[in-house]
Image (cartoon, rainbow, N blue to C red; front, side, top):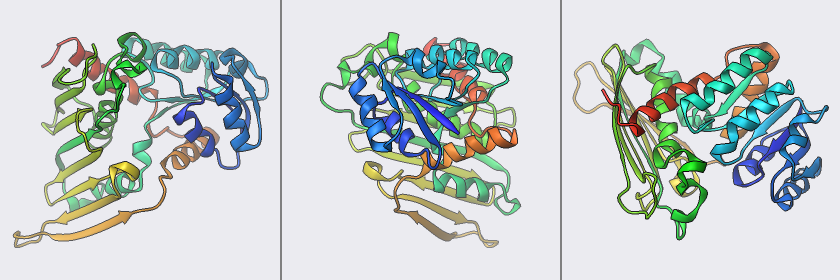
Length: 325
């Protein structure tokens, strides 16, 4: 399929490299040199500094939106109005109310929308989902997740620290991934408690967020997202009645991705332990794009769609507005 990309920074470049055999037609960024760089990497496509030119290109079938948060929904809605399928970066919008515009336009246009929840496509998460779905693991009881980084000099001056541009701080940045993964394993939450606060960085948005989410079946998600972690880390634990799955690392600065399965024995005591390590290059971006293409071709449910983003943003909105319970 023919692809246009809006936003050619780090994530836009990752998306371009993950296109596989699909063709980059046009890339757009306010800084046209970034768009030119992506076209050069792919050795194809036209560079522009106009996002309107990307979404209106007659040859483009899919638009990838990898901009700052304030532009995700406006450009996504524009692409849908031009009858393009859309892959939009997480969180998809700055609020549930904002992304609702995207949901309505997707329904009106009949086109597909995927939100960039690429953690669903990491091999350890895929394997954990497979194991947790088996009867041997038992009914899931709760999950516990931590995701964080240590920022960098000048972090408080970047766009993520600007409330108007980002919509929030660490909760909407990395916390949205933790919420999405928790929903992926446990389903919807009907009780939301949480607290987002700024401890270290001199900025108006939060640098830490703590969440306690509960489903109707009394399953819990205990989550902590932080940009005062100092050492980049990711840990996600899934507890079933007869075992535990623990995912550590995401590759790169987060450490080698690893899944550990602690399987309860009939006599209990020390569990049977099995470990899978995934030291290879992160291919989640490729896997996510391939899955999106497949959902378009076969008209199947998208794994990580705009409704998933809407549900995650509802939780984020509630915590930011202090409406817990």
